[in-house]
Length: 140
Image (cartoon, rainbow, N blue to C red):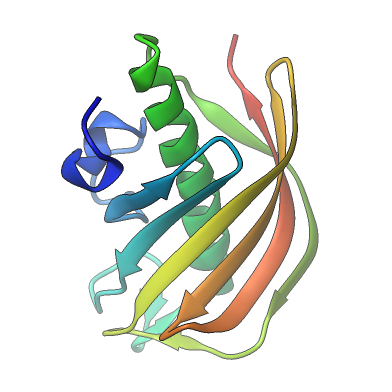
């Protein structure tokens, strides 16, 4: 299997441009995965150079999708649609601005049937700037 960072992100997630909020999957194992996103000024969730909290949440959700996509691709499966089932304890410490690169870490707490519960951490230059717990439900 190809390394995560060698795979075009569009092979791993169902979203298409301009609604793609991850650039690449940079690390994967069964428990922890990491993605990166270079926030550009023309991003759908950027207004006046500031990346919105909705954008952060979508980045987290798509980071989960990239993880699940890589897992499915590795086992010969298909990419599935996922839906945010719940968000708990979302906190953003500061604005994220255009030009910054996000590194989003997803830690799987549990996977039961089509539901995955994760802790998510979003960092800029190694400093955590946002976090939450998210539940993702996969389509059939």
